[in-house]
Image (cartoon, rainbow, N blue to C red; front, side, top):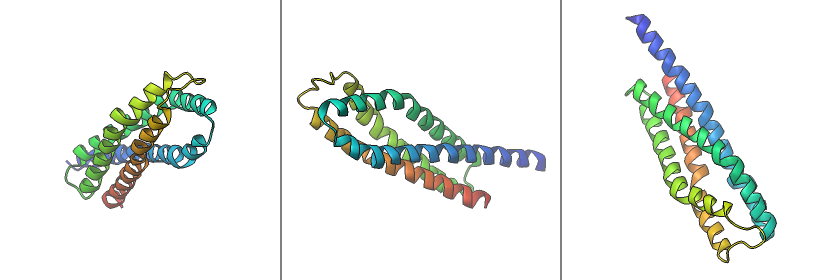
Amino acid sequence: MGGLADRMNSAVEVLGFANLFLGGILAGEELVIYYGVRTPLAGLEERPQTLLRQALIRRLRFLVPAFFVQTILLGAAVTAVDGFGPGFVFRSVGVLALLTWAVVTIPGTAAINAAILDWDPSAPPKNWRTMVSRWERFAAVRPWAAMVAFAMFLTAMAVSFG
């Protein structure tokens, strides 16, 4: 029986490290976009700002969800497989943080991004600044939710396998 338990522990460890790796990439991406790209982008004139927003959206609309989906699925899998072990509470909080990220992203920033892709860079809609401000409010939650998830998954690994 010890062999099966050892294999289960090894599987949980591999899944946990994969989850931690992807969660770190997601948190880093969110930090760079919100704290690195957002401010210089907002300082651009209407046309270049719209063009750059559209280019970023086209590039990131597949990349970010790919990291998010894998991170939340692995986080949920490790939480379920590891059970109520020492890392359970931390992993659960990490998964809840990622659910918060999704609740803000799907109806918030993703919906606004879809609208931005339809804008004419030479003549954005009259309410474009209002739309960008709304995006900003939603986007402010994302890096913090991703960082909390990463920190919780890191803590779970430390207490589970440390």
